[in-house]
Image (cartoon, rainbow, N blue to C red; front, top):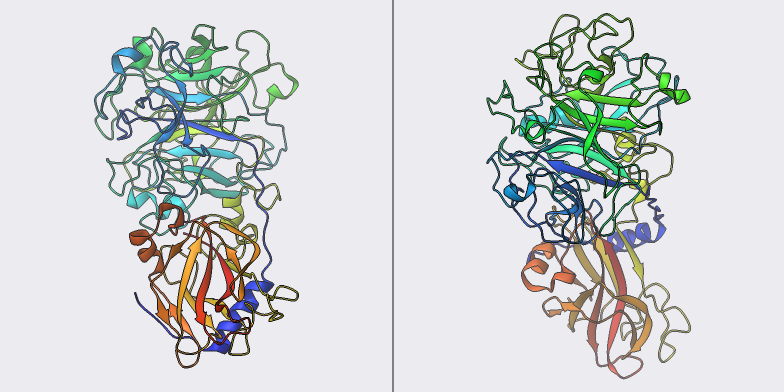
Length: 604
């Protein structure tokens, strides 16, 4: 174990800062995040962390159990929410007929059950002039490179650490009409939810889902579909109240990777451009909006376009009523259906019906504009507004052979994570500079508790024999009460936390112990104990002639090797520290005493 020295005056200064720090209150938004992975993801075949079923590319997943909400890693595998097959076990299902033959297959072995796009109908219809900032969530595939020099597309994409992440727009609106390239108020994106919840090769970290990430292009999971719901940690048997809207994969090859699609749509009697719906747990899976109604499959015939991302607002009128003009859904006359198409679709490069621009696999599309520039879908949000690259005349792209692919899409009614309650996604607050994130963990600093706080001081009348001492533990033979003062930081990755125990009697042995159990002061020899059993102990030390002990840095590494898992130093953990030391000449004649205690809230 390594040691550093810090003057008593500076250490007490740290205590004063800790006592003065204000604690932020985190507020959850009550939205559950659900997703699927593609046929090349290494999580395929592994048991999910909630039910224990093998994960498939047709299953709808949630964040890792037991919490089943995004968390800092390392995490277990994602949890199963909706199984892709026929009714069996505790889960609701999507009723894909070929699920049984594919269940448990390994990554990379094509099996025709891939859910390519997903939505639970949570989105509200966009209104003319509506401000959209930090509410359009999306993912990209492992080949995305992005535009610009900042943000996750610039820092994470080159490291192949992005395909499992959920990104969010920085600021699209107010939307007074479709957005041509770079017409958004603030083009670009931020990382809202990470794939694995661990620090990436770039050093960034955010709450994660339990997926596998790079750093190489092929070994990581690819988040391939995305849906939000009001079920944060849905119970077994849960099914979305408006049904599950989805699209299955086409079979044509990806021109960039050369890998064929798995043909899950055709295998079930559909085409990859159809939007399917399972309206209830007992209803059959059927076509809700056909590919031709969306302006798809018009260039090269059936199944030549693959719908790859999906947002649905259903007006509740039976059947699908396609929008004729963007925003005509506001009065309920039409359904709002927004989507993208996969790279390699015959539609890519064709002129859209609104701007006449070449359609790209990163564009957010809507149904064809009546009397528009072409019979093809219209570009509602050009991909450049999300920081994605495009190709073709009139597009602002980059010197690459292919434009970026928008792999999954969702429009949330409110921010997914808004801890400060200002109505803006936390990741957008940080990216725009409205909130600081000094520890780079994706949580605005105003929402986090202070890194540490002092407690268990022995103010009157707590001294067992009148040995009160308001600034530290109960008074000892030195005439003062012992204190623990922190140095370094609470970062687990840095592992530079240092504990300075001050105002001890000189040349006395002492044990510093740690626990997640912290309670009110209880009598203990000449002092008061607040860090309760069960505890883990650091090695015995002896105080210096000045009455001090120093532990650290390297405490996280020591704890990982010697302590119970409940006392490991993990991001998000809160642990209490207190020192028990000998004091034969102490005022109460019990032979030992305790310092005040220190609570440390660990960060990544």
